[in-house]
Length: 493
Length: 131
Image (tube, rainbow over all chains, first blue to last red; front, side, top):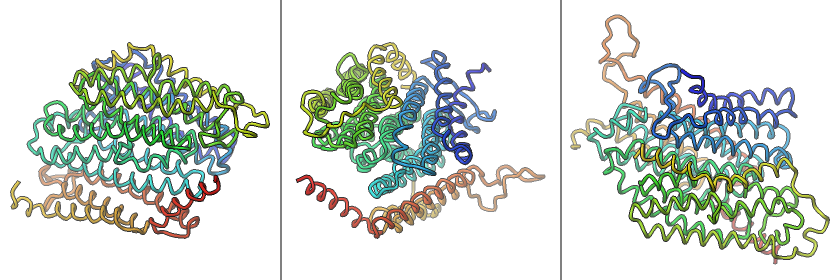
C-alpha cells in the first residue's frame, strides 16, 4: 500500500489527538497553546495538498481501519467530492484559527482560552472525519463531536446572550441528532449493515420500502437542522451572529456545508441507485424548502441592521442554493452544489472575519457604523468587497462558476422555475451586499466615528482574510475542478 | 405488515411511544430542565429500539466457547452501538446542564418563554437607547 493511502486517516486523527493533548500543554506553557493549535491543522492541510491528483474522479480510496475488511470494519471511503470538501475544511479552519489568535484573546482569557483552541481542533477534526467516513454510525459519532464542540464554542464567551444562543442551538440540534440515530437504527433493523456501500446494495433489494422512506426522511430532517435549511433555521441567526467571529466563520463557512454534504452523500450513495421511488417525494419537498430558503434568507438579510446577523441570513440563503443544486439529481447540479460549498466557505469565512476586524478594532457591529470605513481600514474593506463580489456571483469569481453550474444543472433537469429563483436570489444578494459597499466606500464617516486615526486590523487577521478573498478570485478561473466534480457526480448517480 | 406482526413486535411500539413522549416534552414543556429530561427520554427510546433488534429469546452471549451455536447468539453489534450512544448522550446532557446553570445564574429563571421575552425586551431597550 503506498504511503499516501494513510494520509486521510492522519488528516482526521492528528487534529483530534492534538485536541486532547492541548490542555496538557496549556497546563505547562499556556502561551504556546494558540501557536501549537495551528500545527495539527497545518499537518492536515499539508497531507491534503500532497494528495492532490491522486484521488481519481471516477473512483474512490477505501481505507480499512485496523485492517478489518468492510462491511464489518469501519471504512474510510474518500471519493473526489469528499476529498474536495476535506481540503476546503482543513484549509479554511487553518486560516480561521490563525485569524483568531489576536481576536479571541480579547474576548476570553485563562482556562477558557485553552478550551477554545481544544474545541476548535475537535470541531475541525470531527468535520474531516464526518466527510471522509464510509460507516453510517461513525458518521453519527463524528456529527455529535462536531455538534457538541460547536454548542460549546458558541457559548465560549459565557455572556448571557451567547449562552442563550448556544442553548437554542442545542435545543434544536440535539433532537435532530437523535432523529439521525433513529434513522440509523431503522436502516440497521431492515438491512443489518452499517457500511454505506453495503447498505446501498441492500437497500436496492430490500422490500421494506416504507421503513426505508421513514429512515430517509428522518436522516434528511436531522441533517437539515444542522444545515439550517429554511423552516429549521431558527437557531442560525442567533448562534452565528453572537459567536466570536472566527467561530462564526467556521460555523457559517464549514459546519452548515458539511451537514449539507451529509445529505448529498446519503442521497447519492445510499438511495439513488435503484431506490429512486423512496426518495422522490422527499427530494421534491427539499427543493421547495430550498427555494423558500433562498428567498427568505435574501429578504431577511436586506432588513437587518447588524452586520453579523445580515451575514447569517445570507448564509441561510446560500444553503438554499446548495440544496437547489443537488436536488436536481443531475451531475451538473451536484457539481454546482459542491463548488458552491467552496465558494461559500471562502467568501463567508472572509466576510465574517472582516466583521470580526471591525469588532476588534472599533467594536462596531451595526451596518450604518461602517460609513467611511475604507479610509481607515482599507485592507479589510477591499478584502470584504472582493468576497462580496463572490457572494453575489459576479464574474470572475468562484461564486459565478458555482451559480453557472447550478443553473446548468437545473436546466438539464427541466426545473426552469428554480433557475428563476436562483437568479432572484442573486439579485437579493446584490441588494444586501451593495448596501454595505455603498456605506463603506461612498459615504462620509459619521462625525467622531473614526476620529482618532485607527490602524487597520493586525496582520495575523489580515493575511487569512486576504488569502480567502484572493481564493474566491483564483477559484473563479479553475473550471477544470468543476469538470472533475461533474465526472465524480456521474460516477455516483 | 399485518397487525399480528405489530403485536408480536410490541417492543417497537413501546420504543416509538417513548420517542414521541420525549419529543413532546422537548417541544411543549417550558421548563428547560424538563426539556433536557425529554431529550434523554428520546435517546433512551432509540437505545431501547436498538437493543430490542439484537434480542434473541434464550440467546447466549456471543462468545465462542465449546458447543454454542452462532444462531443462538445475541447480536452484539447494537449493544456496542448503544455504549457509544450512551457516551454521546451523557456528554450532550452534560453540556446542556452546564448551560442551564449559566442561564439560571444570569437570568434567574428556567422558563423558556421568559428567556425569549427578555430577548424581545433587550431589543426594545436597544432601540430606545438609539432613539
